[in-house]
Every structure is written in structure tokens, then in C-alpha cells.
Image 1: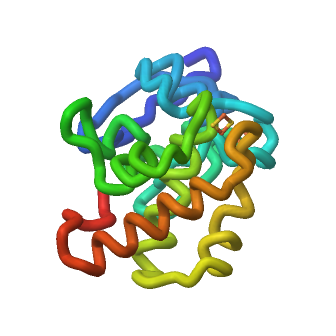
Image 2: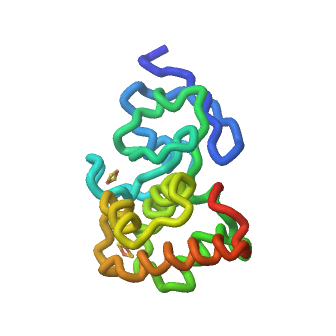
Length: 166
Ligand code: FES
Ligand code: FES
């Protein structure tokens, strides 16, 4: 049917079926087909990390994945992390530590960090900086992002955070 492929992707817990072209990027599928514009597109070639989402729990750059590759899989975007008034604890830490300015990079940082923080419950500063190194931010100078992660880890370790999984 005109080069279209019918795919079924579960995004933030809801299954969506669409007929898409094979060349459609997952980032464009999320933004233009599903209206989930929290996934930002910066470089569109895998460098900036702004488009990072979780694909079956692993952080991927959605500008480097075709939508058809997500057929039958589960995607989590920033819209799936929390809601207004009920932010994910990592979002709260970003807010409290002033870890964003324009916010363009923030969804990518959050989605990149969550699997890392699952695997590394108590990372030191060097490990946090390495975890951040694949995401670009043009505003903050990164210091407050590191602080936000440390704040999240400390809160979670103290047992007052609700957990790192979306
Ligand atoms: S937009 Fe995907 S890595 Fe920059
Ligand atoms: S807060 Fe503006 S690019 Fe990171």
C-alpha cells in the first residue's frame, strides 16, 4: 500500500497503530503522528541527545531509529514520566537545582539519566558527568544538572523519593 507499513507501538502505556513510510524517524513519529512534542529534535544525526527516549527501557536517540523499528515495542517519552503537579522525582530535582534554562535539552537528559540511575544507584560525580557526556546543553554549563542528579540520588537514598523508573 504505497510503501506504507502498519506499525503498532506502545507509547507511555498506550498502544498506537499507524500506517507510516519506512523512512519515517521515530522522533518524527512521536512528534508529528502522536503529537508528543516533548521529544525534541536538535541535530537530527545522533549528536545532541535531545531526542532521547526509552525503547523497551533502554535510552535511544529517536532521530537514529526508524518508526518501523519500534513496531511491537514500548516507548517512553518525557510525557510518560510525570505530570503537572506530580513530577517524576528526577524532574523535581532538576526543578529544585535549577538544572535547566531554556529546557530544550531537558527531556533528553531525563531519559538518558533514568536507565543510568537504575543501573548505578549511587554514582559519584565523575560517573554522573560521564553519563551526561552524550547530551548537549547550550545554557547551563552542566554544573546544576550534576547537582540535580546528586540531589535525586541523595533523596532516593534517604528513602524519600518514589523511585527512578518511569
Ligand atoms: S536530535 Fe537526535 S541526537 Fe540530536
Ligand atoms: S537548558 Fe537550554 S539547552 Fe539545556
